[in-house]
Amino acid sequence: MGEYRIAVIPGDGIGPEIVGQALLVLEAVGRRFGHAFHTEKLLAGGCAIDARGECLPQETIDTCLKSDAVLLGAVGGPKWDAVPGDQRPEKALLRLRERLGLFANLRPAILHGPLKDACPLKPELVPDGLDILIVRELTGGIYFGARGRREGKYGPEAFDEEAYSVFEIQRIARVAFAAAQKRHKRLCCVDKANVLETSRLWREVLEALHPEYPDVKLEYMYVDNAAMQLVRDPGHFDVIVTNNIFGDILSDEASMVTGSIGMLPSASLSAGSLGMYEPIHGSAPDIAGRDLANPIATILSVAMLLRYSLGLEEEARSIEDAVTQVLESGARTADIAAGGPALGTREMGARILACL
Image: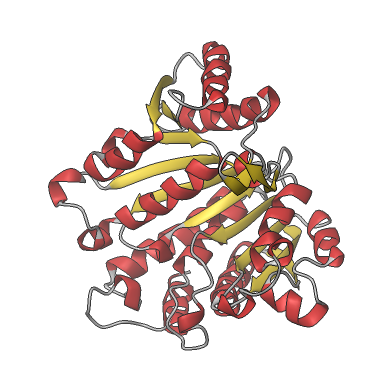
C-alpha cells in the first residue's frame, strides 16, 4: 500500500538491541498491512566517534533529511567521557534536532493498567491510571544558547544563556494547544515566571494565542510546584508545555511515576512530516549485550513514527494493542517484573511479534 524510507540510528549501549526488536516489529507491520519500509542504518554517537572520529557524520544528516522518518536507539556512555564537550556523543542528538528542525518533543507518560503495581505512588493517587503528554520545546533555550567561561564577580566562572524568541514559543504552543484539543482540552504551561524574563514572554505569547483555542483550558504553574504535583496529584495534568530544560527534567520524573523509564517512547517533530522517534531512556551500557533491556519504549516509538510521520493510525494502534496484550498476559522484563520472572529483550520482542 505504501513505500517509506526510514533512517535508523542504532547508537550505543543497548541501542542496537532494542532497535533490532523494533525493526522486527516494523517489518511485521509491513507484512500485515502491505507496506514496504526501506531502512538504512547510520552512525551517530559514540560508535560514530570510534568509526569516523566525529559524533555525527554529515552523511547521517543527509540521509535523515532524505528519509520519511528517523528511528533512534540511544547514544553515549562512560567510554566517551573524556571526549571534548563539543564532540561528546550527546552532541549528536542536539545537532540532529537542530539540523532536522525538530523543535517539538512529545513525551507521553502513560501508566498501563497491567503495570499499576509498578507505579511508586499510592494507588489512591492514581485511581484511574495516568496519561500525561509533555510537549517540550527542543531546539531553543539554555541547551542552545551562548555559553563559555569568563572572569566574573568572584573570579573565573562559567555561563549558559537562556533565550527564546516569540516565534519559537508560538510554534511549540500551537503544537501543545492542538494536542490538548484532541485529548481532555487542558493545557498547563510550566515555567518560572516569578524569576525568569523568558518565562514571562512564554506567558505573554500563550495568552495571545489562547483565543484561537477557546475550548482549551489554559493554566500556568511554576516548575518547582509542577515537580511536586507530578507526584502528589498527577491526574491534575493533561498536556504540559514547557521549555527545553524544564521539559527534559519533568518528562523523566513523569516516566518514573509510570513505573519504568523503559516503557516510554517519544517523538521529536519538525514543521513538516519528518520526525525522529526514540525511547526516552539512555544507552544503559551496564546491561548492554546481556539481553536484559526492555524494548517496549522503542517499539512504541515505532508506533509514534507510524502515526505522526507516516499518517498510519491503524498500523500504530496495532503495535500499541500488541504491547497491551503482552503486558496483560503477565509478560515482564526485569525493570517491570518487581522481582518476579523476567523475559529478556529478544523474548519480549517475540511475544509482541506473536500478538501482531
